[in-house]
Image (cartoon, rainbow, N blue to C red):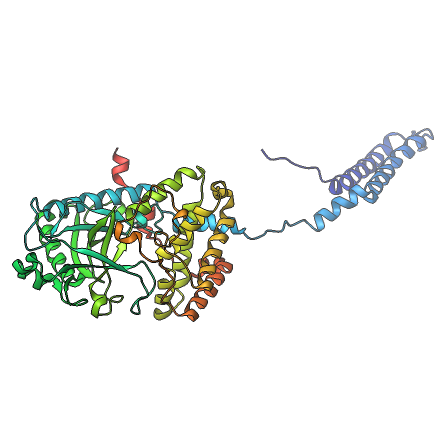
Length: 498
């Protein structure tokens, strides 16, 4: 409904003009009618004429009085100088929330469909390679798999396009391998969890009876009285085995998507490209299949990448993964935190800032930046902050404060060159009692995730991290989008059909 406001600056002059004009015409028209036949007018009409001319003068007087009043002057100034409200930029909280919703947050629906499709394919794959009876002279699939990584811990960012799966292997029947752990930093190694070796005596009866397996998988590096199980021949066996199992189950899945298999960075990569709308929202997904050996208490040994295993004894070492312990710890923390907690959002935003800041670096600096600020190092600092802070401090309204605390923890670790491994730090009081470690790791020395890096590199990373937080609005505006727009915006036809 439109509301009209009377403009007094126009109204009063208009009324004065109209009244004057009416009196003028009235006086002119009636002048002849009020005269006597002898041409003399009546004198009694003089008083009436005086009143008629006095009325416009009074109107003009009231108009001048109103314009000279404070109310009239104030209205005039409002029209001449309108008040324009000052628009401020978004606050840091608004910036983080907007960036999270537009670039970081994943659709739970899309992620759920993607995980379900990956689980169905991998379960059929490992079932096809499972051996009911342990083989005597080769490896075999144990028949299960372990889902690890950010996609299954609810802190993945950008797009659900990559999934990590541990595929536990079964050793030949009768073969016993002893695990021995050595701290990182020994022999020129870098930072991280301790590396373990799997060895068996050279003079054992099993080794003499199964020379084919010994020649294919075991090496004589290290101590002279033991054979070492090397990751390289295990990977060499794993790839054709996965290829053979995939051939047995390929047909029903290729009606929905194209499946390709490749060996990338010492990991077997299974790539799924949608053929129809079965793969939710047409997302191309990669599945990294990682061979692993069970160490005990749901900890696993995984092959070291070649870049970190530089020949000699180091080439026969395995790194330790704690996927079940980490997932159990996250579930316990989630039960303690408020319903509207921002703990996952803080971790996701920090990982997204790391990727955003790495886009402006050259290849060498970007590799060093991501190596120091690895996802595991960021998650370790985040878990430490969760364990040492009050649960109520993680409410949604404290998002900016908790982000600053997390950045401060990381920068302190970079300056002190010390970020202890969460499960191998030598201070068991920090973790709840229900988390248990395998026996070979209970007496392992403390592990420092920042060991092995150049101090100047750590200082540069710390300075760049502070700069990225201070100028986050510029990085967001100038950086490339990290989101798969197809996966973000498309609606799933299966959801519409239900």
